Image 1 (cartoon, protein in one colour):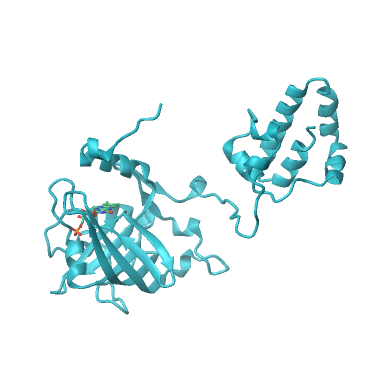
Image 2 (tube, rainbow, N blue to C red):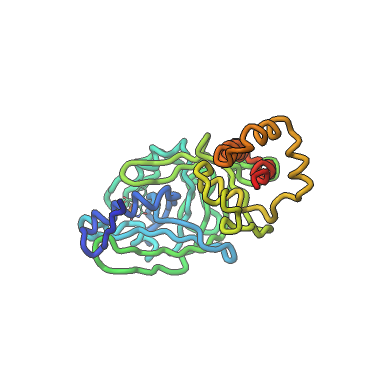
Length: 298
Ligand SMILES: Cc1cc2nc3c(=O)[nH]c(=O)nc-3n(C[C@H](O)[C@H](O)[C@H](O)COP(=O)(O)O)c2cc1C
């Protein structure tokens, strides 16, 4: 059963909680900012993402508090000094980052409260977090407020001027290795998510290829009771079905021959077993071979 919710018919807090529970995991911008008196602030924001790379643009939102419609020091600071450093949070600093989200009085430096080190920035006034694996020095190019009531967004649009990357998180090709980055992300309530171990996996980008699409797959495959949506996604990402010759060669394999004989008068079982076999191959990303198996079905 699907529950349909109209944001105008529930409390702001209730909808906020559904949004944050569903739009997850969210990356975390650990933002250092400064007021016009030079007082430093450090706070995390998970309403954050990247939106372009030429120029490199990121946006985060210190929203109005749902509770009492007050605004965040970070928002006040960027209006006084339109510069920030966006530090990326890894697992090693997640507890300190959370501590920095405490609502300390204005003028309290959360670098000190959270025991993190201020490193001098090059292009902007607020310092970066020395412990962060990546830090982006940014100028604030615009602040767009959407609403005036509790929960309203304030989009802080930033252009990245400089990036600082710890070389320890790079692979041999000089790219950021997700497992070495070990980043954390925010989910609903008190939940976080750690991008490491089994949480990391690859999906081949269909940038150079134009896959057939699930709609073009043979009916028995499309309507399979064995193959999942992910299996069909992998199968539909191929540009062509196997050549007849390759299909016939594959049919000479003992295990395939045995199944073709065993189920020669029972198409339903044949389809079921071939789909199960293909599914095992797909689990190992052997898409081409899975197609050779599936192509044995007339
Ligand atoms: C992981 C995490 C993510 C957060 N994301 C946001 C956010 O996107 N927007 C927001 O307004 N507050 C967010 N908060 C709450 C702020 O960090 C918190 O209100 C903080 O005290 C604001 O500090 P400031 O008033 O010094 O700017 C988040 C807190 C945590 C721990």
